[in-house]
Image (tube, rainbow, N blue to C red; front, side):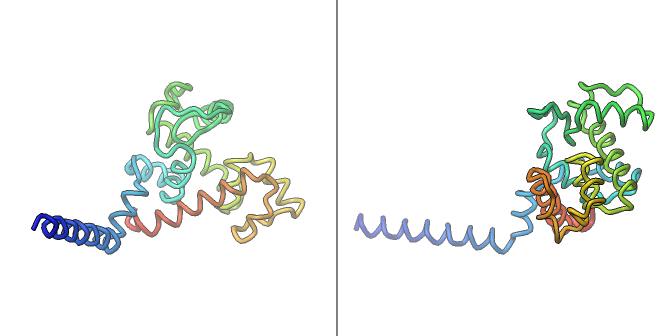
Length: 191
C-alpha cells in the first residue's frame, strides 16, 4: 500500500514536470523574453529617435557590452551601459555639447550612458554611410581600423563576410550584437 502511494506520487510529479516543460515550450515567447529582457526601453527609444537609429540595435549593443548592468567598468576602463572608453566619451560630450557628464555620471546613470553611446553610434552610422554592420565594428575596434579594413579590401563591411574582420574580438562582437539584434527584433517587434 505504501509503495503504491509512492508510485502514484512519482507519477503525479512526473506528469506535473512534463506539463511544466510543455507549457514553457509552448509559451516560448514568454520564456525568450525572460531570457532576453530589454531594460530602459523609454531611454533607448528616445535616443534611437534622436540619432536615427533602430532601438533594437542600441538594445543589442547594451546587452553585448554590459548586459544592462549600471556601474560597470571593463578591464580596459570602458564605462557605463554602453561601455565607452573615457577618451571617446569625453570627445562625444564635447562634440555633442552635453552638459555635466563625467565618468561617474556615465558609469552610474543609464539614461546618460544610453544617450552618449547612442550619439556615438549614430555618428559612426553616419560616417559609414548608414552601414550598421561597419558602425558596430567601429564601435568596438575604432573608426580608423574599420576604415583601413574597408579601404584595403580586407573586409567589405557586410555581415556575410564578418569572418574576414582581422580582429577576433571585433569579429565575435559584431556576430554577438547582430545575434541579439535579430533576437530583439523577433521578440519585441513593437519596440
